[in-house]
Image (cartoon, rainbow, N blue to C red; front, top):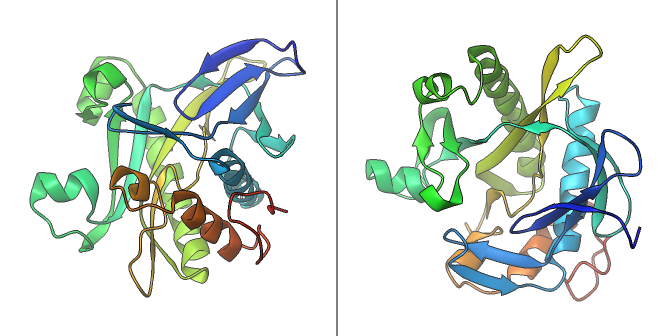
Length: 252
């Protein structure tokens, strides 16, 4: 695998050509970024933890019938995934006021929303990933109306599953970001599946008792102990041993 071909490098992951047609190797880096790459750091062990947490969640989503690109974990930092045509949208599901929605509408952070809200953002770092409407999506042909319906339906199913999963671990699911891609069958019919990752990098997770943040906001807000918080999420989900230094070396 040392001579494998790098296809793409993002802020937190690298994609390599997979061992079989239609597959990719997704490598999780220790790099942490925020505010459109204006804030950067390397957090030892973060990639290992995100790999294991995302593996655990994607496996369970596949099991309940939510289609994902995840095939299997290869090692502590890498997964074998299906190659998809990424839709250039970030789909954000919000259960509790935090981040940009609290700022936009003058809501108090931590205020429960009337219902789960699904938002779309156009994936473009240079533009700051702007919030877009379904009208924009259709006008610029980023996705068809059926694609949008499918993404919303899948996002809400993921929200139901994750809410129960994290509640059982004493964690409040505030909001999270998803990415979707298209796959094509032999008749050139398309299907929307979940891609990218689900981890504390892409979710807001608060301890249900203390309200302590257990996600990337610890890095954004200089709260410290980022990998320790990620390790605690992994421990509560049952994918990490009780002991260790919290860098992910004890992930099982």
